[in-house]
Length: 280
Image (cartoon, rainbow, N blue to C red; front, top):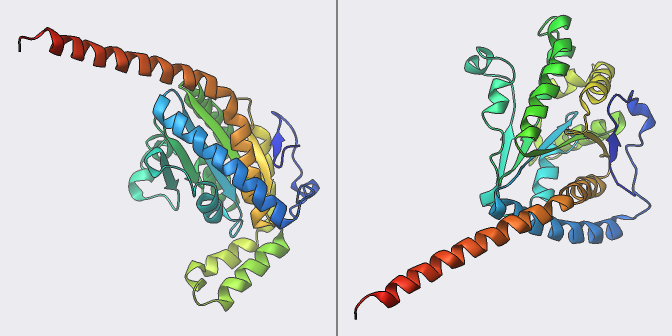
């Protein structure tokens, strides 16, 4: 049974129907053991992805404040080879970024072949924050659903494997995490008054996320809802989804690596033959 919930294209999403405290019938100890197994498998998959250079992987993480995007990155990528990974964070656009189309800053950092790229927030901010805060007219943000789908379809056609995760946290859990940060001087640096201001628009953000999930979950770039109140389960669900989704590509990567090996061995043999033919 998958731990994350895949949204089929065109499905009307009601986030209230998804349990944020789901645990997959496991306790934390069993979940940690399963996560360790899957994380080791993801490590092997990422090594083959990097070496073969056939595909790239794009992981999109979205969620309300404190939903655990940073924590998920640390946990899921903890054993991966840093040479083959790249993390990009998207905050308030700079003046340069605002002078281009909204996808410009995203496209320029899309992962190259062989790379597993992670977007900590993403182009979806332009149909979430831009919508809730009325930064652009409704006609503009509504048109962006189709523009995003076209962009992701183009990436997929170029060999990018796309996984988009919405970290689904409850309003009560968010409050507990915000208060915990206030009480811990070592984590208070993560706080801002904006966290509490944005919380006041919780329902508007939930509606915006529901529409984004509905309009932008496609066969080539599916959205997954990840129950995120339990941090260990959040990490497990993301890792399991990546392993399950990437496994079918390992054969083509293996074939590419085998062909590469034959070519390298032939090159080495030609070098040795040339050496042997030279007068001593």
